[in-house]
Length: 269
Image (cartoon, rainbow, N blue to C red; front, top):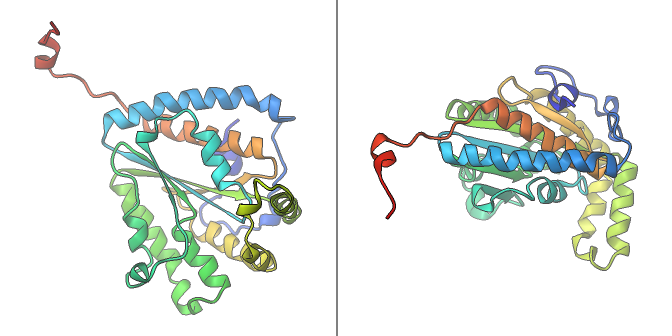
């Protein structure tokens, strides 16, 4: 399954999320059908992560965005289950602090980008500043509308300095979100995930869809393309993201550093 071709947003294109079916599984019938392939990808990722870490010259940044309940946490939990945690750093961006608000909107983001050899995962990201900031009217349009170009310039700079960027929008339907929110209310072990504010955001579904469409279209670039991942089926979502990660890391062609002649002459007594 070539996820890059199936789910990549063509740079410069106009995005309509209604054109992207969040329930498609591209030939996989159920969780069992995808289980073996996901496990194989997790094994591949373990090896590829070792290569990236050992090479120590470049980094990979995975950006995860999506509506509430789209599965950002679940994706991280399943896809990165076999990786060495010392080589992965997950950052969840919430409401900016007062100190962060005293800087430009990318200041706190840049501080958490992955260092060389690392895989960084953003659970929400700098895109919140053209999503929630826009929908909640936290800044005037004259401010947030400039941020698309600023984001593109920022991602270009990261890429030119050795960070490969993989961006995934976890696409779910409004009906699927209702089901997942209801599950959080019914299950005592999931009650803590439910916030009253989730319902207020849900009422703004159409506004958020429009904001995402603009972000996906304006900020899918050749060096940092967006991918729209069908996420109504959690198992397919995990498989698709794992496949994209494997393809991305393989394309980076990381190499193990060679030991010096002096080291090779050493003997352990």
